[in-house]
Image 1 (cartoon, rainbow, N blue to C red):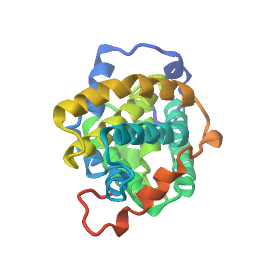
Image 2: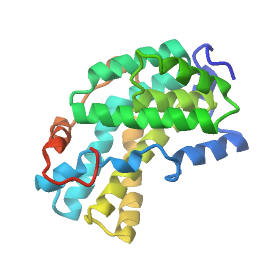
Image 3: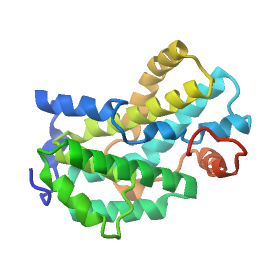
Amino acid sequence: MECEGEPNEDNAESSTAGPLQLWSQWQLLDSILPTGGFAHSFGLEAAMQSRLVVSSEDLKTYIIHTLENTGSLLLPFVYSATISPNTQSWHNLDKTLNATLTNEIARKASIAQGSALMRVAASVFTEIPCLKTMRAAALSGGVYFHHAPVFGLVCGLLGFDAETTQRAYMFITMRDVISAATRLNLVGPLGAAVLQHNVGPIAESLSIKWMNRGVEEACQTCPLLDTIQGCHGYLFSRLFCS
């Protein structure tokens, strides 16, 4: 597949993927993929220590608000990168997101995960050689490798449709927050599975609400969570990077 193509309109309209695409989709969603997502709690650790999250109901509310923020702020970048998976679009989205993120903790977490994802994608999906070329060129400077645009870029080059890509991004966010809650002993493994199943329909409705929007519509809907995450660096003891 060419790197420098026109906007991926066919992908945006397609509702199905071929068998090989499905294997790649599953691999991108697999927790074994070493992209560093499990090193981050999306501010949950700071929320717990600040007593914002105490009960199981608090945890569910926090996850829903995190998904709302993800949908409103990051899905536009995922969507734009997916429908236009080329170098110029990626670089513009990357710079715009770097200027949009409002706290240093979230910015560093996004860069760390995006850099890891781009490195893994270039090594794993060798059928798309331009991923390696784009990464090598970007390493010379000027690119931050924010996670949302990289995720959209990789999915777009792999031929995924835009709606599947946006749902996948919401899913990995939900998965990682619930995984962090398990390791923070806020919920047990079985309770985490039940929680994920219960939040699924809400995640779907939020995905539909914020799907297919341009970056000019990106916004914060739960600024308190952003503020809490920004306090992570001041915690006396921490299990997560963010």
